[in-house]
Image (tube, rainbow, N blue to C red; front, side, top):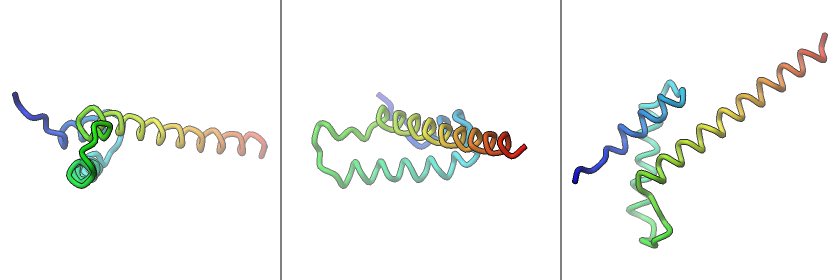
Length: 83
């Protein structure tokens, strides 16, 4: 069975979520996951595989999009009250 390329998968997911710097972010995230997998305890509840990587990127993207939308809403509300 072949081993999935976490770097390429992370990069594709980031670009699909709208990030323009997916290459740099994917390297950082996959390095973090590799270091955690190597350095942390081998307990069953520590999952540093592909499923966890995908979930991490999805949640991070949702959080960033929510933050950006809140900022746009706040800016719109400020402009609305200004006039």
